Length: 382
Image (cartoon, rainbow, N blue to C red; front, side, top):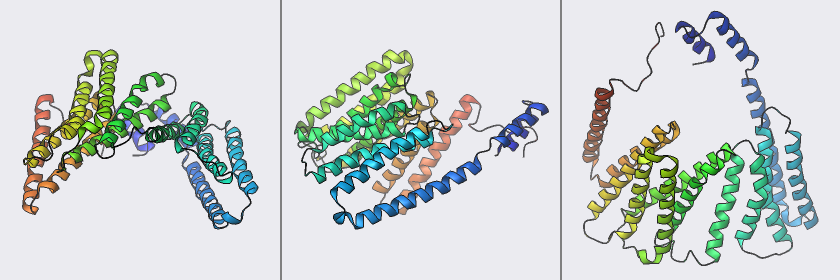
């Protein structure tokens, strides 16, 4: 529905008079930006084609290019990104400036790698990534959109990962789900920082939420897979990542109680289910004979976690979180059917039963609330 149809609907509903409707229509026509997006789209395609072509030509002749020319070219691109940032700072839209800053953050890692190659420098990767994170932080603080915060968090996460590997703290964690516990712990730490960052930089707070929920969600899916494994996990070798995860979950629960108070019941339930899902996947005996029962327990915990997250997101007014948790839940239900089904008959009966349960839940909601989750039609609307 375009703006004219919306204005007509509002006018029929008595929300707008003719004078205001005409004024809104004129304003929208004067500020229509569809043609601007077409120009920017063509410009982006042309610029991308030129950059890709230059990269291909340089890569084909890389060994023949003198080192001083490589360093000069990289330095010119780095300074050019800053010049582009300064030149677009006065534009009404902040996307152009943030894209130049994004290119600048990418060039930081490229020039560090080039210097190491030219001068034959050796070092651990975490140092280069930590330096990139430190140099990308100023761009993150001045950026309007959260894209620069995503770059900074990416550098920081990779730097921390390589640092733990160099320190020997990741020994055996790749075979005993220690990686999952560390990823979930880092995700919870990111979520703990949302309240501090939100008043100062809402875009960066949104990036923290994306990374936090992303890391926790990937870990939960990995734990769900582990519930179906037929091997015995040596959880003693991953006890310290598990302990860190439990401590991070406790800190997050305390934060929920302090910030939300009595209204944090569903979020606390999500934390409890997350801990049960991850810790139970490692502590329970996967070498036993009742593998189907263990698989169903993991499935139940995962579905309960998705349901609690969806309800918590709905209470917070997040449509994206609610829809995403619901889609993940639906995907897990379908995956279970394909895991357990012996033939198409069993799969079909299971899907019919699930559909019946969903319709029964919708009917129960309607009986309790006497309302269906659809938008009412306006009088006279087609």
